[in-house]
Image (cartoon, one colour):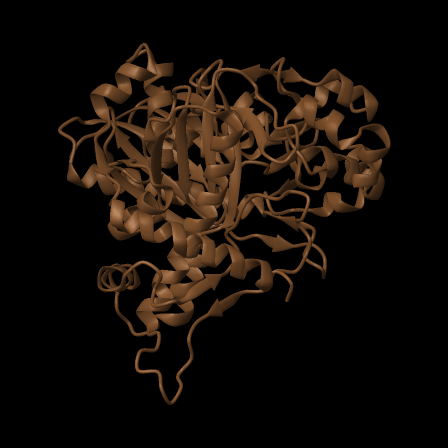
Amino acid sequence: MSNSNNRILTIDISSNKIKVGLVSDDLKLTSFRSQDLVILNEDIDGFAKYIDTDVMWSKIEKNISDLIKQEGKIGDIDIIGMSSCAQRMAVVFLDHQGEVIYCGPNTDVRGIDSAFLIEDEFSEEDLFKITGHSPSILFCLSRLLWFKEEKEESYNKIKTVLTLDDWIVYKLTGEFCTDLSSAGETQLIDITKGEWSSVIIEAFDFDPDFFPEIVDSGEIIGDLETKLIKKFGIKHKKIPVVKSGGDTQASLLGMGAIEDGNVGITLGSTAPVHIVVNKPILDPQCNYWTTFHSIKDKWIIEGNSGNTGIIFDWFKESFLRNGENANELIESYLKKTTPGAGSTFAFLGPEIMNIKDQVSLKRGVFVFPPPTLITEEVPKIENFARCTLENIGFGIYENYNALNQFLKLELQIFCAGGMAKSNEFCKILSNILETPLTVPHWKDSAFIGLAMNTLIGTKRYSNYKNLIKNSIDYDYYSVDSAASKKYRGIYLDWHNLKKKVDDL
């Protein structure tokens, strides 16, 4: 617990949670609240999805009010600033009155119906050279075109296009703006110039006024609106709101991954692997994304392993219904099993990033030696738990290895997120990667990254390096050479079996 009374109020809208935290000015997470983020289907097929912003905002307000009340009972606190981040690729369209026309999560792929319009104007390679992103169906560009083609009346009402984090800042301050870590995920930003792409905007005849001013992450946007100060139960009359942006970038910042060659693995619902670079480097195969870090003049290259935390949560909910603490139970399973999980393999989704294959049906498969008359050892639940986590580790390894070969940098790996709370999984991951892991004490590193931006924006610190050096504590996981050697062979077996599973 921090000795400081100063607090930074942080908001993090992830893929499935609405989270609010209070962080001290020495970067300790003192308390947080979380509620589910509900994603709604707009069509039968489930391609078109949306978020009810009234419900989401109501949950944000309740989480903040409850947190302020909770910490106020312990002692006096001073809210010195606040910042927010949100899931990347989520966007909000507003009308002239600032009312929401549409709020789409990062899983909304309605743009699949308008992708042909993009293909008529740009080849995949040309669009990737401008934006560092593909395929088009995932991003704001295709969703704007969908509204233009399919809901012309709604499209004609659009005044402002924001990312989800931009919208939160608007709700807090009444100001419209974006930052590159958010806007870089819209497929409307020039990845080299760091500005809205006039080439793309003109090609599709979008109103340039749709797109707000770009500011730096770590910049004060305005003060928290007076009505919200009262509603949240905050005693002070002036609370600066600092721009942050994408949740992944905030997480990278909070784990300390800010230098050229730093690798940040965010173990959330998915497990993106990011390498920090000093200039925009584009994958010639148009597979690995390039976007902006929240640190000025820093970019990140991304390989994404797909559903990882989602698979982990599914396994716990589906197989561990005995009333015990599932996380503690799995930790005990990992301690009593060995690499390879008794020749039990899982193929549940995590794998090398392949953006050209986003629609083929994937089968979830366990491969294991079944009971026979002559078999004495058969897999138990602990083996299935271990192979599920090894599958996640192998998916991360494939992306890490591909990026490592692509960029040829001397790398240091940082790791945070929900699954980083598992001491045993961190050991497994370090051994699979054959590289030591640097893991911050606070695994919910997006909260810490938001607090860091606030401390920079309010001039309490002048640079991120000193802030990290003075305030972030780490655990270190070294490589067990014997286990790592075993994993080389186990991974090859898994990889070869996966080719057969993919043909099912």
